[in-house]
Amino acid sequence: MKSSRYLGVALAGALAFSAASACSSDDDSSDGASSSGAKLTDVKMVLSWLPGADNVGFLAAKELGYYSDLGLNVDIQAGGPDVNAEQLVGSGAAQFSADAFTNVLTANDAGTKLVSLAQLTEHSAIRLVSRKEDNITSPDDWKGKKIGIFSSVNSFYASLAKHGLDQDTDVNLVEQGADMSAFLSGELDMASGYSYNEVGQVIAGGVPASDLNVYSYEDDDTATLEMQIFADSDYTAKNPDTAAAFVAASLKGWAYCRDNADECAKLPGKYGSVTPVDFMTWSVNEYNKVLWPAAASQGEMGVMNADRFEATAKILLDNDVIRTAPDVSSLIRSDVYDAAVGLLGSDVDLKGSSYTPLDVEP
Image (cartoon, rainbow, N blue to C red; front, side, top):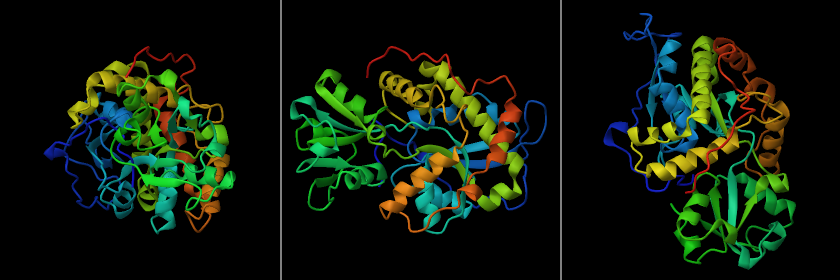
């Protein structure tokens, strides 16, 4: 089960996902045309969740014409609690998606053949929130506590194991609902949340940041890789140029949202979100802090670091989330990423070294 990542969301009926099969021939083109008159290749992207801060880069690439500039007609479909992006991409109902690397690994462990095209984040955005008055500062303080969790966040289970805590007897785990109301009402000692969403919900709900302890799994060296662009291995093998064009335009969209967070915050509303723009602006700004500047081990956004991939896989293996160690060398399609960077040339800054966040509150 994935988290509800947005404060108040609804999907327009027009965004219902179409499970129509993808065209099977290589780089099939539509009757549409780019500004240069060339035919466009039709592809579908399914979001891993509802439109929000962690997918605005793709929305920007669509709205600003970056996909069409590179020969693609991209149909972006919203995800949600009943949408499994990995299954849809693996079955050919969609060609591309972006989701946590852990979800790609678990899907492949269950039989899909997905490959990684670009790693968007190397910093983890998942947090555990508690009140300072409860003095919960590290996993050593979790014993006996009632903790709200998202079942797909494997870093939590890795931290339990690292600190010798039994998930069945030492802590009281509660599958977290769609918002932070259980924490705000005092039903939970700790609650899970993303730095760009649920943490802001708590602050907006009347608990100032100064009254919170916000725990990051990176502090415990159990953080796993999160958002990456992925595709089906067979599709990518047959359509490497299309995959490279999709990655290139998407990276350009994310760079735009880095420099224009307030503008990108308006885009989810066009795709069905009813989150207030003010909160979405804060949310996009916070997500930018996860993305930029690109992690030192990446150098540029999108670079796939094999050591980090192996470390994430090990966490899942050690906690029995996956049964078989993945072949990282065949999973990472660096050739597609390199081709994408070549398409962008020097016009797009993928480092973000001079990035400065906005000064906004949720």
